[in-house]
Length: 250
Image (cartoon, rainbow, N blue to C red; front, side, top):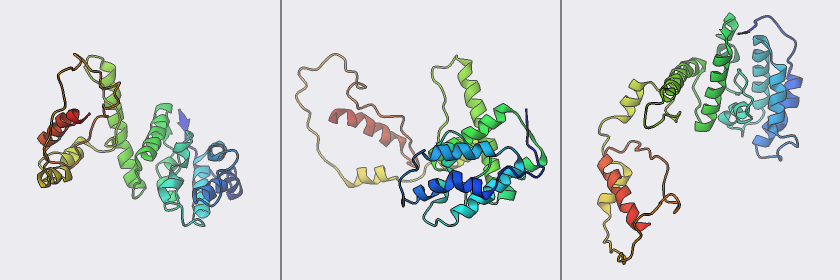
């Protein structure tokens, strides 16, 4: 178990943060090449300085001050530095975050075990991968809890081993089942594919198919796509038809 401490600390000051992250912040603006040691070295160095909740709050404020000088940096780019480097820290690296609000849970002296810390890191990395940015600390905490429960369900399902398929974490992992159904289920009207199909028509002529192989491994032909997302399209039959027709044009 890891106890998050709340007593004052002098371990972190803005000079240390500047040394660790300012070269990387400048790099993110496109003004200079990436630092010789790489941005990840700076992030990992900063992580090593942060040990208590007071450290986290101070480091967060330092990063906010530093990032405020670089108007061309997107907030999500700043936030994703830690996750990108595989050394996520449990305070937000963001110029728009309220450091005190973000750390309110930690300041209560909550006990976090290694599993919880790992899950926090996974959520940060997932946010970076899918470009997810939450409006405030309250929303982030809510979405993290949903993400955590969904990940647990996925892992338990896959451990069962008696299914012909496996589940994985995707871009919907921070939505509840009800939220997902509310946005994805039901007829949504004509999507772009539907409109294009109705607006255009063309003829198709078969090639010479008198000598065809008995089997074809389309994977080796490079034409097998990843699992497709229907999105907001309200006509799944049309999508299935397109997939069948696509094979004729390979």
